[in-house]
Length: 141
Image 1: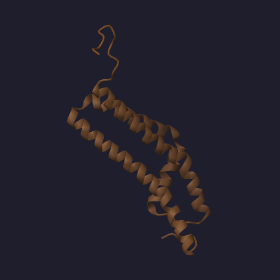
Image 2 (image 1 turned 60 degrees about the vertical axis):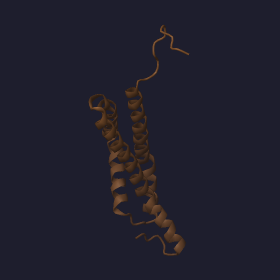
Image 3 (image 1 turned 45 degrees about the vertical axis):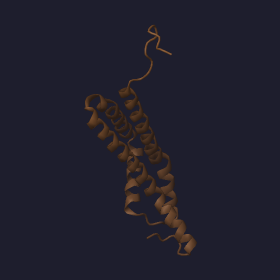
Image 4 (image 1 turned 90 degrees about the vertical axis):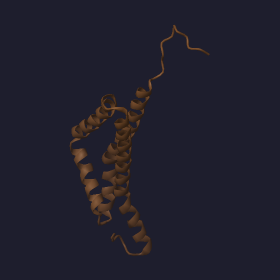
């Protein structure tokens, strides 16, 4: 069916869809990171403290960053807003090949950040469970 000239085009342009996709993925990653910092990290840190589990350096850094994000929520929200503004505005400024490269780097970086935070929070838990099943107590090496 040919398009009706009396109706305006309602489809997003390719660049609009590209920006919307980047915005959705970035927003989801930021929500996951902030939710982990605000809700999950304090609970897991308390569990590890109660069980007297020695934390690896990465977990100590992630729990410290989560405490900083909770103590200054305005800074966390400003950082998230800045990231979203950059995600929306950079595709409009940069040439297309550089834009695609930046998108790949952005998505790999966001995926890596979420994976590192998840690993830092749950790795001591898994090693604690393994040490308990092995009969060694709560000593995590």
